[in-house]
Image 1 (cartoon, rainbow, N blue to C red):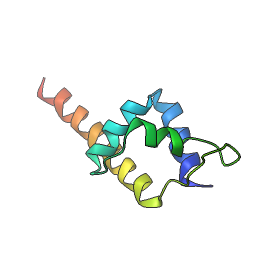
Image 2: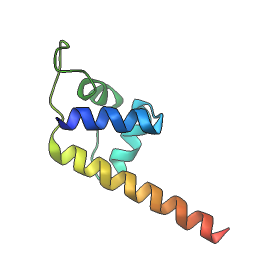
Image 3: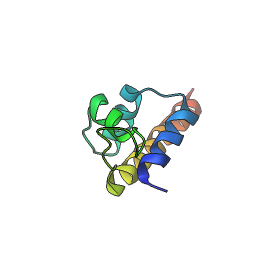
Length: 78
């Protein structure tokens, strides 16, 4: 399974769009445009497919964890 497959699956689970994914990646210290994310979300057989680097997936998951933890902290404060 490629990082692309995991990123695509998590996007589906979160019901997120490419802009949402770019924001989460920014929390993980990765600058990526929605256009670059669209390329990573392509399937292997699609024209223009590029493999999503493993470090990008790792940073995305770190950003997602940061986002979820921040949301928990905000709920605790209110």
